[in-house]
Figure (cartoon, protein in one colour):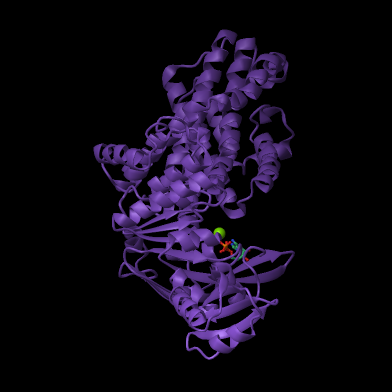
Length: 254
Length: 318
Ligand SMILES: Nc1ncnc2c1ncn2[C@@H]1O[C@H](COP(=O)(O)OP(=O)(O)O)[C@@H](O)[C@H]1O
Ligand SMILES: [Mg+2]
C-alpha cells in the first residue's frame, strides 16, 4: 500500500516535470518521424520477401519495428534522468525521508514508460494516412508489449547508470550496446532478408522476439505463436531487470 | 541531543588500478545539547560534510557510534531519520516546480496527508518569507531565496534536530544575515541546529558552541568566547606620554597581567585573562602612580587566532 502511494506520489511529480518541459517530445520524435516520411516509402521493395505487396503492407511491417526501436532507445536512455537527479541532490533530499526507496525508482520508470507510450501513439496516428491498418485489440496488446519492452530497456539503463554513475561514460556505453541490439532485433529492416547466420544469432536476442511479436500483431494475427512466445520472453526479462535495478537502487541510496 | 564517539570514515578511490585512501574523518567526538546552535567550523576538505552525512544516516561510518535524540545511529537509522532534518550543501530542488509544490511533496514524502501537507506549506512559506515567490519556479529564485526554501524543506516535518551543511556559503551579506535570523528563529522554536561553516564570523556570531575540525580531527571545542580566551586571553594595548619604564615597573608583578611587552618607545602590550576586568585595574594603578595614559585599547583574539594556534595555519588562507 505504502509502495503504491509513494510510487503514485512521485509519478505525479515526474509527469508534472515532463509536462512543463515538453521539448523532450520534439527530440524523441524527430528521428522516428523522419524515418516514417523519408525512409519508409523506399522500403516496399525491400519488404517484398515478408509479403509487402503494397505500400500499405510496407507500413504495416515497418511501423511496428519503428515503435520497438523507439521504446528501446527511450528506455535505454532513461538512465540519464536518474543520474541527473543523483547529481542535483534530489535523491539525497528524498533519502532522509521515510519514502519507499523502490517507489523513487518506480515513479521514474512509470514516467519513462508514459513518455514511450505517448510517442508510440503519435507515431501510430501519423502512420494512418499512409495506410497503416491495425485492429484495435491487436493494437492494445501491442502497446502492452511495447510497455514491457520499454520497461525492460529502462531497467537495463538504470542498472548501468547506477553502476557507473557518470553521464559521459553512460552515453557512449549505451550507444555502443544499443546499435547492435537494435540491428539484431530487425527493428528497421526485417531479418527475413538477412543472412542465415544473423537470423540464428537474432534468436538469442529477446528484442528480436519482441519485434516479431509486435509485427505479427500489426499484421493482424493475434493468435500467431510468436505473440505469446515473445510476450513471455520479454515479461520474464522485464521482471528480472526491474527487480535487479530496484535492488541496486535501494542498496545505492538506502 | 547529539552524541558521537570516535566517528571515522575513509574513502577509497580507484584510479588505474591504484587504490588511494582518504581518511576524511579520523575519530570525531561530539556532544551537542538540546536547543543550541552548534557550529562545525573548518576549512574546505576538513571532513565537515562527511561527518554531517554520517550523522544524517546518509553514509555508513567505518567506526564509532552516535546517538541522536537518544536513537542509535547504526542500529536504527530509520528512527534517526524520523527526528532529523537535513539540508545538503547544494540543496536539492527541481528547476521547474514552485516552492509550494516542493514543500507539499516533501510533506507528503514524510507521510503527511495532502491537506496536512498543504497547511504546513502555507505556514512554511510565510515563516520563511517565501509566500511572495511561492508559486514561481525554483530556477527563478535568488541564492538566498533558494537557500531558505532548502531549509523550509528540511523542517517541514518539524524535526528535533536540523543538520545544515554550509547554509550561507556563497550568499551575499544581506541574505546571510537573513539566514542567520531564520536559524535563530528555529532555535527559539526549540530546535537543535547543527551547522557546518567555513566562515569565522558565522561561527562566532551565530553559534552557541562550536567545534573546529581540521584534517578529520577536532582540534578545539567550546563556546566562541571560551575558545578565544583559552588560547591567549585578551590583549590590552596602552599608549603613554612618556617612556614605558615606569609603567612596566608598576604593572609587571600584577596578578592579572600574564605577560608584558613593550611596543616602541611609549607603547605597552599586556596579555590578560579578561580584558574587561583588567582595564579598570590598569587605569587605577597607573593613575595612582602618576603615570598619564594617552590611549588604551582592548584587542580580543578572533577565532582565526584560535585556528592559527591549534593548527599553525590561518583559516583565511587554507
Ligand atoms: N566521495 C568521495 N570520494 C573520495 N573522497 C572524498 C569523497 N567525499 C569527500 N572526499 C574527501 O574527503 C575529505 C573531506 O571531505 P568533506 O567531508 O566533503 O569536507 P568539507 O565538507 O569539510 O569540505 C576531502 O579530502 C575530500 O576530498
Ligand atoms: Mg562540505
